[in-house]
Amino acid sequence: MKSIEKQLNWSLSISVLLVFFVFWWISVFTIHHLTEDYILTRLQHDTVSIEKHLNRASTGQNLPSIDYDAINPIYAQPLSGHYFVIQLGHRTLKSQSLQDYPLFLKNSPDKISHYETKGPVEGTILVRRFHTFYQQQPMTLFVAEDHSPIQRTLQIFDTLIGIFALLTLLLLYWGQKTLLRKGFKQLDPIHEALKNLHKGEVSQLKTEDYPAEVSELIENLNQAMLSASHQLQKSRQSNANLAHSLKTPLNMIYQLLNDVAMKDHPELQKTLQEQAKKIHNRIESELKKARLASSNMSVQPFSTLQDLTDLTQSIQQLYPDKQLHLQKMPDTPETLPIEKEDGYELLGNLLDNAAKFGQHNLYITFRPHLDESTGQTQTRITIEDDGAGVPIEKMTEIQTRGHRLDESIAGHGIGLSIVQQTVEAYAIDLQFGSSDKGGLKVTLTL
Figure 1 (cartoon, rainbow, N blue to C red):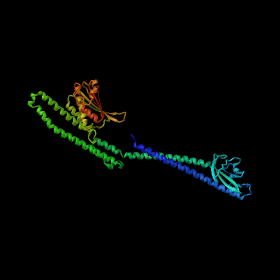
Figure 2: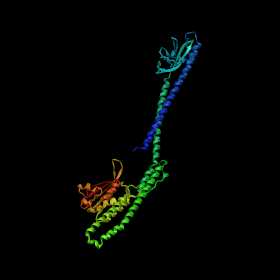
Figure 3: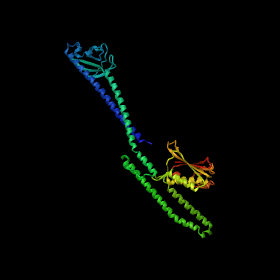
Figure 4: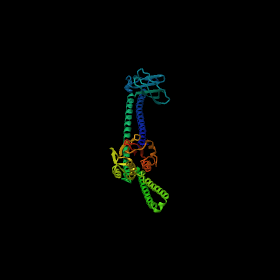
């Protein structure tokens, strides 16, 4: 099952990550580009100063002596990080700061260009190349500056902005996850409302109590619940009408069977009695099947407090010579996931069977059971008696739908058809076995 929260978290996280990556790249590129432009601007100013100085100190075709004080004294300091080289024809003039270091001079067809190369001491230096003319001769000025300190500062900036972007991304992820959970928390009342519907306490949900995004879902759910309730009422009313309509003809048949004239025809009387009994059993079976309400969530569930007490008292009154032992373990739920009348029918039939064929005692036990495959807590009900029991080879036969114990096992006279129908309707796990108390053991897992 896909989680909407996980899908939203993933999609939003990827989107925010892409946005922050673009933001980081633009920030780093812009800062680096601005820094390089700033250094090139300074190199341009020094190039202009050197060119003007050469023109002022011109002595003909040869390069004049350089007055470093007139340009910038830093070019006279050895390995100062500021250097220049002048190429005039085959003659080359280097700044004193370079000393004897052979600076790499890169040729280019462009008038102005720049490149990075290894410096005399530093890792790399930025070189600006400028092509001009001096005394009608082509001259190229190479002005360089060590930008290692700025590069180290930029590396620190790149690291800091990366850490800031990562922390911001994590903060946004945590924030959006919190907001999503808070948003989905608004749907919790729906779960509570459905639990109440299952208990029969509420039949309709209020749309205004839930977010607008699920209002249509709430309306459709209300309509479905209302429709199911109407269908159940209509079905039960039809069954009641059917029962009443067949009651009178069936009573007439029984009266005719008791008529004096029928006693002269014992075979006919027996045949009619058998057919009338089949009709009666069929009516009872169909009415009980129609009353199964597992598909409707708004009916009253079977209560382990009141309904179970009423049922056990009724069984005890019917069989005063038998002792019924009821045991409910801690954490037994107050209601079972089964409709009230169906619970009476299911447990009543099984208890009646245990009371009929137990010798002195019958037992019913409720305990919680953890389903390891799903991790859900179920309710397990065990009904036992101390009677003769059922042979092991007959255990499979009595679980067959519609099978009757009184047709296969002496002493047990309960038809399991209705029990099987109820079990199938509610997806209840039904198991038969031998009880350590001597009789039959029936286990229901709801």
